[in-house]
Length: 86
Image (tube, rainbow, N blue to C red):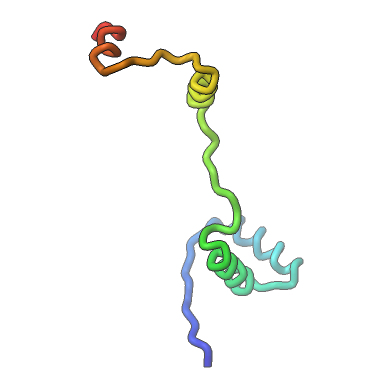
């Protein structure tokens, strides 16, 4: 007999209903879908899809300035502090 484990998860009721309907349309149970997901995590050694945060507008601007070499460079912190007038 195969060993089994139980997963208890709290989620939004409407989300669960929507997902259950999709699984029903696919002809699979929630348990089967979760096992598929877990197997994909093992195969990929991580999440089977890309997870990322979109950088802020300020960070995007800073990255662009750095790539275009439009940044001030300093030889040391004293030079930077002097320039910042701290």
